[in-house]
Length: 603
Ligand code: GDP
Ligand code: MG
Image 1 (tube, protein in one colour):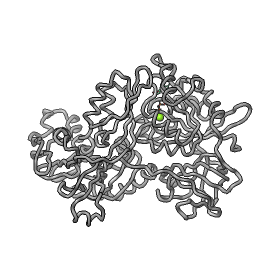
Image 2 (cartoon, protein in one colour; image 1 turned 90 degrees about the vertical axis):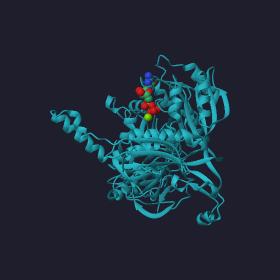
Image 3 (cartoon, rainbow, N blue to C red; image 1 turned 30 degrees about the vertical axis):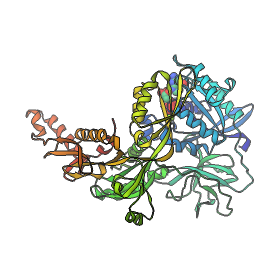
Image 4 (cartoon, rainbow, N blue to C red; image 1 turned 90 degrees about the horizontal axis):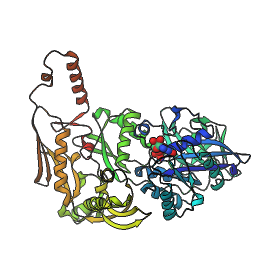
């Protein structure tokens, strides 16, 4: 394919607005996949994606389309919609010249639509606005058009109105991709140069990289290197995804595809890196802004003997998800493990689920925390840290009040889009979460866009769930980091039978210490099963206990409940008890279920 017959594009949208469905339709229309029901959501390959119905990992697929007598190669890069995975979105966009901006006609423009629009706009991509789900009875195409006019300056005649589900007007989308999105700026006669925009780890092949070829061509057997790493690799296999891996002779200027060259680690297959032939180095591409983790959590093996296995699994999974940061960690109660940084709580949960499903690793994840800062006043600490401003990643590192001039916490800029009937409830919620309103705009007759400065600590756990529930699902939310601001922070300790459990402790705003302490204690009471002896749960600020719960010891044998006779029921109970034990971790003298740390925070 000559470069002028190639188009690289992405579909961006708020979650559930129909990206994966439209991707399926486009692949069907071009004959890339068959129309069987089993082919639904072909780009969502991970088990966690199919189970949760969300896209986590960007995928690519190449297809061929005829237009005005010419044959075109269209490379589609699917992107995740959730705010936690925005990093994947901006990465995919770097390999594209244009996007389809998809909006659900029933829901209208949502917070992530706005965020995604600006990502594409700032990357100077061609944007094709598409209103989806016009087949729905509740579809409000007119209001959606008005929102897209007001917010993004689109003209009515530029808008496409489709049903991805029924395939209405979808073929026109392919034509528009060809008409309105420019071909990549590539030069086939220059030496080979490619952007490594993603990589996945394969147990047998090592790193499988996704590349967008800028100039020249590459073929099997070529010796290649990257701009950040002078090692020489031999290309073992390359090809396109259509949507499964399909090896080809070569990849040439303008193409998007995969390439396997025996790279083994994240350092070797660095996302954003520029690849070139070893014999002809090139000017490197600008690369990507590194992802900035917003939520930190410890991860520890159930048994110390499983540490190595966990390390291997974490290494491989971080190769597939380069937005996770990894540092070694150790804790008196949990032994050796890792401190991982995630882009959000969903990201953390998904990572954990992938560890179990794809790498068969069971791990304990500690209570998530956000990185606070402290300006130190103590000469001793300043000497020790060699700086007077430290970042605190876990409650164990929280310096005492007498040693600091002030604490600071991360603040985000949140965008909420909502029907105006819910405004009062949203105002109360944001106030309760220590939010500060900075913008209020009507985007059509009845919908409002709000901007709030909010402490990350307040929104990281349940803000989104609360917002959804008070608005019956009608409000949407997105955020980006904003600043660090002074804050009255305290360390809230959790004690089990008198022993401080750092892994359960948390850093909170002074005004939240009492309610959070009460909730933590009562939730722990719910998740920790009865033990052979009494367990006392306390939440404390320094020496001051602010909440207390007691779990009474169990006296009766569990089997006492099944009045002798029923053997199979007895076996079932014994089995369940044994399984329960396996998922427990002894901390001090108390058995704690492995998901307690994360579940106490959720509603
Ligand atoms: P994504 O999160 O953007 O990838 O959205 P999906 O493609 O997974 O779609 C979310 C839901 O909307 C699914 O239940 C789809 O079947 C449904 N959906 C997608 N497009 C349409 C459409 O044109 N009409 C209707 N009625 N439903 C659609
Ligand atoms: Mg999807």
